[in-house]
View 1 (cartoon, rainbow, N blue to C red):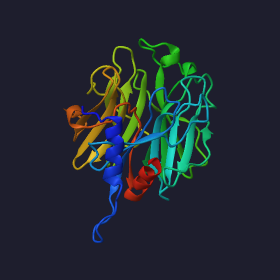
View 2 (tube, rainbow, N blue to C red):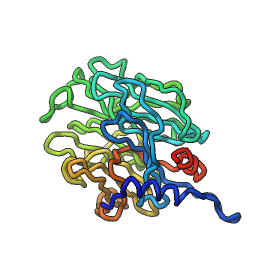
View 3 (tube, rainbow, N blue to C red):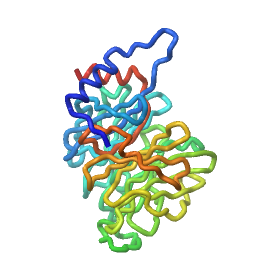
Length: 313
Protein backbone atom coordinates (compact mmCIF):
# COMPACT_ATOMS: atom_id res chain seq x y z
CA UNK A 1 0.00 0.00 0.00
CA UNK A 2 1.39 3.40 -0.96
CA UNK A 3 1.40 6.22 1.60
CA UNK A 4 1.72 9.98 1.25
CA UNK A 5 3.80 12.28 3.45
CA UNK A 6 2.10 15.10 5.36
CA UNK A 7 3.74 17.77 3.22
CA UNK A 8 2.99 15.87 0.03
CA UNK A 9 -0.62 15.38 1.01
CA UNK A 10 -1.21 19.06 1.74
CA UNK A 11 0.53 20.17 -1.42
CA UNK A 12 -1.32 17.62 -3.53
CA UNK A 13 -4.62 18.69 -2.00
CA UNK A 14 -4.12 22.37 -2.63
CA UNK A 15 -2.74 21.95 -6.13
CA UNK A 16 -5.30 19.42 -7.35
CA UNK A 17 -8.34 21.36 -6.19
CA UNK A 18 -6.94 24.84 -5.65
CA UNK A 19 -8.59 25.94 -8.89
CA UNK A 20 -11.56 23.62 -9.29
CA UNK A 21 -13.32 25.44 -12.08
CA UNK A 22 -14.64 23.29 -14.91
CA UNK A 23 -14.97 24.14 -18.58
CA UNK A 24 -18.34 25.68 -19.36
CA UNK A 25 -19.59 22.53 -21.06
CA UNK A 26 -18.39 20.17 -18.32
CA UNK A 27 -20.43 19.39 -15.21
CA UNK A 28 -18.78 19.78 -11.78
CA UNK A 29 -17.33 16.57 -10.38
CA UNK A 30 -18.44 14.74 -7.27
CA UNK A 31 -15.57 13.52 -5.13
CA UNK A 32 -15.26 10.47 -2.93
CA UNK A 33 -14.89 11.49 0.70
CA UNK A 34 -13.62 9.28 3.53
CA UNK A 35 -14.34 10.22 7.15
CA UNK A 36 -11.33 9.71 9.38
CA UNK A 37 -9.72 10.25 12.76
CA UNK A 38 -6.24 9.86 14.21
CA UNK A 39 -5.42 8.06 17.43
CA UNK A 40 -5.97 8.73 20.30
CA UNK A 41 -9.17 10.14 18.76
CA UNK A 42 -9.32 13.33 20.83
CA UNK A 43 -8.42 15.81 18.08
CA UNK A 44 -11.60 15.58 16.04
CA UNK A 45 -13.08 14.74 12.65
CA UNK A 46 -10.77 14.43 9.64
CA UNK A 47 -11.36 13.82 5.94
CA UNK A 48 -9.71 12.17 2.96
CA UNK A 49 -10.83 12.88 -0.59
CA UNK A 50 -10.35 11.17 -3.95
CA UNK A 51 -11.34 11.66 -7.57
CA UNK A 52 -11.21 7.94 -8.41
CA UNK A 53 -11.95 6.20 -5.10
CA UNK A 54 -8.51 4.55 -5.13
CA UNK A 55 -5.90 7.26 -4.64
CA UNK A 56 -6.63 9.37 -1.56
CA UNK A 57 -5.29 12.66 -0.17
CA UNK A 58 -5.85 14.21 3.24
CA UNK A 59 -7.81 17.37 3.80
CA UNK A 60 -5.47 19.06 6.30
CA UNK A 61 -6.78 19.83 9.76
CA UNK A 62 -9.68 18.73 11.94
CA UNK A 63 -13.28 19.83 11.44
CA UNK A 64 -15.29 18.95 14.54
CA UNK A 65 -13.73 18.81 17.99
CA UNK A 66 -15.49 16.26 20.24
CA UNK A 67 -17.32 17.70 23.24
CA UNK A 68 -19.47 14.77 24.42
CA UNK A 69 -18.79 11.61 26.40
CA UNK A 70 -15.07 11.05 26.92
CA UNK A 71 -14.29 13.87 24.46
CA UNK A 72 -13.25 11.43 21.74
CA UNK A 73 -14.52 11.06 18.20
CA UNK A 74 -14.02 7.57 16.82
CA UNK A 75 -15.54 5.67 13.88
CA UNK A 76 -17.11 8.72 12.17
CA UNK A 77 -19.86 7.92 9.65
CA UNK A 78 -21.53 10.43 7.33
CA UNK A 79 -24.61 10.09 5.14
CA UNK A 80 -25.99 12.73 2.80
CA UNK A 81 -29.67 13.39 3.45
CA UNK A 82 -32.26 14.18 0.80
CA UNK A 83 -31.85 17.86 1.66
CA UNK A 84 -28.10 17.63 0.80
CA UNK A 85 -27.20 17.97 4.48
CA UNK A 86 -24.28 15.90 5.79
CA UNK A 87 -25.27 13.91 8.87
CA UNK A 88 -22.49 12.60 11.13
CA UNK A 89 -22.53 9.97 13.89
CA UNK A 90 -19.58 8.73 15.94
CA UNK A 91 -18.45 6.68 18.95
CA UNK A 92 -18.39 8.71 22.18
CA UNK A 93 -16.64 6.37 24.63
CA UNK A 94 -14.98 2.98 24.97
CA UNK A 95 -17.15 1.99 27.94
CA UNK A 96 -19.87 3.41 30.16
CA UNK A 97 -21.78 5.42 27.55
CA UNK A 98 -24.90 3.98 25.93
CA UNK A 99 -25.38 6.63 23.25
CA UNK A 100 -23.58 7.91 20.16
CA UNK A 101 -22.75 11.40 18.93
CA UNK A 102 -24.63 13.29 16.20
CA UNK A 103 -24.07 16.57 14.32
CA UNK A 104 -24.99 17.97 10.91
CA UNK A 105 -23.47 20.33 8.36
CA UNK A 106 -24.24 21.85 4.98
CA UNK A 107 -20.60 22.29 3.95
CA UNK A 108 -18.49 19.99 6.18
CA UNK A 109 -16.88 23.12 7.65
CA UNK A 110 -19.59 24.60 9.86
CA UNK A 111 -21.35 22.15 12.20
CA UNK A 112 -24.44 22.13 14.37
CA UNK A 113 -24.28 21.66 18.12
CA UNK A 114 -23.32 18.13 19.06
CA UNK A 115 -26.06 15.86 20.40
CA UNK A 116 -25.93 12.59 22.25
CA UNK A 117 -28.41 10.08 20.78
CA UNK A 118 -29.52 7.74 23.63
CA UNK A 119 -29.45 4.59 21.51
CA UNK A 120 -29.22 1.96 24.26
CA UNK A 121 -30.23 3.94 27.35
CA UNK A 122 -33.39 1.86 27.63
CA UNK A 123 -31.57 -1.50 27.54
CA UNK A 124 -30.44 -2.64 31.01
CA UNK A 125 -26.83 -3.74 31.53
CA UNK A 126 -25.59 -2.25 28.22
CA UNK A 127 -21.82 -1.72 28.45
CA UNK A 128 -21.10 0.39 25.38
CA UNK A 129 -22.11 1.65 21.93
CA UNK A 130 -19.43 1.30 19.27
CA UNK A 131 -19.01 2.29 15.62
CA UNK A 132 -22.42 3.73 14.62
CA UNK A 133 -22.83 3.63 10.86
CA UNK A 134 -25.51 5.02 8.58
CA UNK A 135 -27.56 3.13 6.01
CA UNK A 136 -30.47 4.56 4.00
CA UNK A 137 -33.41 2.14 3.69
CA UNK A 138 -35.01 3.38 0.46
CA UNK A 139 -37.87 0.87 0.68
CA UNK A 140 -39.11 2.23 4.01
CA UNK A 141 -37.70 5.73 3.45
CA UNK A 142 -35.81 5.85 6.73
CA UNK A 143 -32.21 6.09 7.91
CA UNK A 144 -30.73 3.28 9.97
CA UNK A 145 -27.83 3.68 12.38
CA UNK A 146 -26.17 0.31 12.94
CA UNK A 147 -23.79 -0.21 15.88
CA UNK A 148 -22.45 -2.86 18.23
CA UNK A 149 -23.08 -3.19 21.96
CA UNK A 150 -22.37 -5.60 24.81
CA UNK A 151 -25.55 -6.47 26.74
CA UNK A 152 -24.60 -9.12 29.35
CA UNK A 153 -28.18 -9.47 30.57
CA UNK A 154 -29.21 -11.00 27.22
CA UNK A 155 -26.93 -14.02 27.74
CA UNK A 156 -25.69 -14.46 24.17
CA UNK A 157 -23.34 -17.35 23.45
CA UNK A 158 -19.95 -16.40 24.83
CA UNK A 159 -17.55 -18.54 22.87
CA UNK A 160 -14.17 -17.41 24.20
CA UNK A 161 -15.37 -13.90 25.06
CA UNK A 162 -16.07 -12.32 28.42
CA UNK A 163 -19.55 -10.93 29.04
CA UNK A 164 -18.32 -7.34 28.76
CA UNK A 165 -16.67 -7.98 25.40
CA UNK A 166 -19.43 -10.07 23.79
CA UNK A 167 -20.86 -7.74 21.15
CA UNK A 168 -23.91 -8.06 18.92
CA UNK A 169 -25.23 -5.69 16.26
CA UNK A 170 -28.18 -3.36 16.90
CA UNK A 171 -29.86 -0.50 15.07
CA UNK A 172 -32.12 2.51 15.48
CA UNK A 173 -33.95 4.40 12.73
CA UNK A 174 -34.92 8.00 12.00
CA UNK A 175 -36.75 9.89 9.28
CA UNK A 176 -36.09 13.44 10.44
CA UNK A 177 -32.72 13.16 12.26
CA UNK A 178 -34.47 14.49 15.35
CA UNK A 179 -36.39 11.49 16.70
CA UNK A 180 -34.79 8.05 16.79
CA UNK A 181 -36.58 4.73 17.30
CA UNK A 182 -36.13 2.28 20.14
CA UNK A 183 -33.17 -0.07 19.55
CA UNK A 184 -33.59 -3.44 17.85
CA UNK A 185 -31.26 -6.41 17.59
CA UNK A 186 -29.97 -6.61 14.01
CA UNK A 187 -27.66 -9.64 13.98
CA UNK A 188 -26.62 -12.41 16.34
CA UNK A 189 -24.30 -14.70 14.36
CA UNK A 190 -23.45 -16.78 17.42
CA UNK A 191 -20.20 -14.90 18.11
CA UNK A 192 -19.05 -11.44 19.11
CA UNK A 193 -19.22 -9.07 16.13
CA UNK A 194 -18.66 -5.35 15.53
CA UNK A 195 -18.09 -2.80 12.74
CA UNK A 196 -20.95 -3.70 10.40
CA UNK A 197 -21.59 -1.89 7.13
CA UNK A 198 -24.52 -2.59 4.79
CA UNK A 199 -24.65 -2.60 1.00
CA UNK A 200 -27.75 -2.82 -1.19
CA UNK A 201 -26.95 -4.70 -4.41
CA UNK A 202 -30.49 -4.90 -5.78
CA UNK A 203 -34.11 -5.61 -4.97
CA UNK A 204 -34.22 -7.81 -1.85
CA UNK A 205 -30.45 -8.22 -2.02
CA UNK A 206 -28.43 -6.84 0.90
CA UNK A 207 -24.90 -7.60 2.04
CA UNK A 208 -23.51 -7.03 5.51
CA UNK A 209 -19.73 -6.76 5.93
CA UNK A 210 -18.74 -7.25 9.58
CA UNK A 211 -15.87 -8.01 11.89
CA UNK A 212 -15.78 -11.30 13.77
CA UNK A 213 -14.40 -9.88 17.01
CA UNK A 214 -13.65 -13.17 18.77
CA UNK A 215 -10.07 -13.57 19.98
CA UNK A 216 -9.09 -16.35 17.54
CA UNK A 217 -10.48 -14.49 14.53
CA UNK A 218 -10.72 -10.68 14.49
CA UNK A 219 -11.21 -10.72 10.74
CA UNK A 220 -13.89 -9.69 8.23
CA UNK A 221 -16.81 -11.79 7.01
CA UNK A 222 -20.05 -11.24 5.07
CA UNK A 223 -23.71 -12.19 5.50
CA UNK A 224 -26.76 -11.74 3.25
CA UNK A 225 -30.44 -10.81 3.63
CA UNK A 226 -33.53 -9.84 1.64
CA UNK A 227 -34.20 -6.81 3.85
CA UNK A 228 -31.76 -4.44 5.56
CA UNK A 229 -33.17 -5.43 8.95
CA UNK A 230 -32.70 -9.14 8.20
CA UNK A 231 -32.87 -11.97 8.94
CA UNK A 232 -29.29 -12.46 7.77
CA UNK A 233 -27.61 -15.71 6.77
CA UNK A 234 -24.84 -17.30 8.75
CA UNK A 235 -21.56 -15.45 8.42
CA UNK A 236 -19.15 -16.53 5.69
CA UNK A 237 -15.58 -17.69 6.02
CA UNK A 238 -13.19 -14.75 6.55
CA UNK A 239 -11.93 -12.90 3.49
CA UNK A 240 -9.12 -11.05 5.32
CA UNK A 241 -6.28 -11.98 7.60
CA UNK A 242 -6.02 -11.59 11.36
CA UNK A 243 -6.40 -8.30 13.30
CA UNK A 244 -8.34 -6.14 10.86
CA UNK A 245 -11.44 -4.01 11.42
CA UNK A 246 -13.53 -1.05 10.24
CA UNK A 247 -14.68 -2.11 6.74
CA UNK A 248 -15.85 0.60 4.33
CA UNK A 249 -17.41 -0.29 0.97
CA UNK A 250 -17.60 1.76 -2.22
CA UNK A 251 -19.01 0.85 -5.64
CA UNK A 252 -16.59 1.34 -8.54
CA UNK A 253 -18.10 0.34 -11.87
CA UNK A 254 -19.10 -3.32 -11.60
CA UNK A 255 -16.84 -3.88 -8.60
CA UNK A 256 -17.08 -3.24 -4.89
CA UNK A 257 -13.94 -2.06 -3.15
CA UNK A 258 -13.76 -2.93 0.55
CA UNK A 259 -11.29 -0.90 2.58
CA UNK A 260 -10.27 -2.02 6.07
CA UNK A 261 -7.94 -1.05 8.88
CA UNK A 262 -5.11 -3.60 9.03
CA UNK A 263 -4.08 -2.50 12.49
CA UNK A 264 -1.66 -5.36 13.12
CA UNK A 265 0.52 -4.12 10.24
CA UNK A 266 -0.26 -0.40 10.75
CA UNK A 267 -1.53 0.00 7.20
CA UNK A 268 -4.84 0.33 5.38
CA UNK A 269 -5.86 -2.64 3.26
CA UNK A 270 -8.36 -3.25 0.49
CA UNK A 271 -9.93 -6.04 -1.52
CA UNK A 272 -12.09 -6.00 -4.66
CA UNK A 273 -15.15 -8.16 -5.31
CA UNK A 274 -18.15 -8.41 -7.61
CA UNK A 275 -20.12 -11.08 -5.77
CA UNK A 276 -18.90 -10.91 -2.13
CA UNK A 277 -17.75 -14.49 -2.56
CA UNK A 278 -14.42 -14.08 -4.38
CA UNK A 279 -12.08 -11.32 -3.24
CA UNK A 280 -9.00 -9.92 -5.00
CA UNK A 281 -6.28 -8.20 -2.90
CA UNK A 282 -5.95 -4.48 -3.70
CA UNK A 283 -3.78 -3.21 -0.87
CA UNK A 284 -0.79 -2.58 -3.16
CA UNK A 285 -2.97 -0.65 -5.63
CA UNK A 286 -4.53 1.91 -3.27
CA UNK A 287 -2.96 5.02 -1.74
CA UNK A 288 -4.03 5.93 1.80
CA UNK A 289 -2.39 8.70 3.86
CA UNK A 290 -0.52 7.54 6.94
CA UNK A 291 -2.44 7.77 10.21
CA UNK A 292 -5.91 7.37 8.68
CA UNK A 293 -8.31 5.45 10.93
CA UNK A 294 -11.55 3.94 9.78
CA UNK A 295 -14.68 5.84 8.88
CA UNK A 296 -17.09 5.62 5.95
CA UNK A 297 -17.05 6.67 2.31
CA UNK A 298 -19.60 9.09 0.84
CA UNK A 299 -19.81 11.49 -2.10
CA UNK A 300 -19.55 15.29 -1.96
CA UNK A 301 -19.80 17.98 -4.65
CA UNK A 302 -16.63 19.57 -5.93
CA UNK A 303 -17.62 22.92 -4.42
CA UNK A 304 -17.81 21.37 -0.94
CA UNK A 305 -14.36 19.77 -1.28
CA UNK A 306 -12.89 23.03 -2.58
CA UNK A 307 -14.48 24.85 0.35
CA UNK A 308 -12.79 22.48 2.79
CA UNK A 309 -9.41 22.91 1.13
CA UNK A 310 -9.76 26.68 0.99
CA UNK A 311 -10.51 26.75 4.72
CA UNK A 312 -7.51 24.50 5.37
CA UNK A 313 -5.00 26.88 3.79
